Image 1 (cartoon, rainbow, N blue to C red):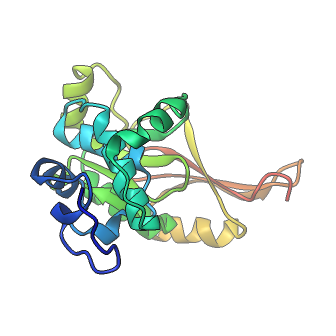
Image 2: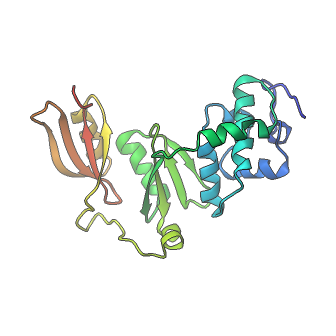
Image 3: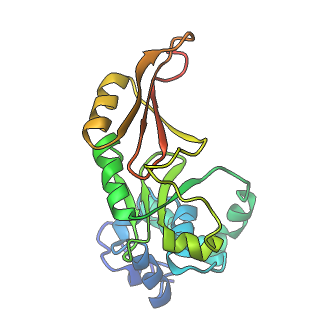
Length: 222
């Protein structure tokens, strides 16, 4: 098994357990250098790969991703199958993504960055799918073309000119007034200016460019 120096490695193909096929999969999801694996969640990388390639890959790909993230973070070289049991033990349901279908993924990502400060975590080369860096639960956007493929077009498309769907995204901040003003300046449609609720939380509402209701609020209990 390959045993490179993780501090100087520069080619994906030189990683343990990685050949040309896995290296190409990594490049499809924006990992073009071994150091970009540091801090990544292997299951999220796998999910991105399945979305971008429009197919479900063998679970051993997750094990391989686990092995190379582990190597880049610790320097320990282990075969990919050493991670199979760990992957199976961790196979519990969790809330991983909110995905909104939009007319332009690229423009929507740009808006959320300008309006709320969320960095772009990933966007595939076709611009049909992208994610924001929003913490444990990822806020993502996919094109209506992908929505037609996944759902046969059988869904209601959100539109800023229509009555909003009965769902909201809640973004938490200590300074709601400033965040509200920044969002409106970036193109968000104001719904309700910030106000203090009876339970002490400050909350304001806007609509984003694709039509979602956004709640901007202080942490509950503050």
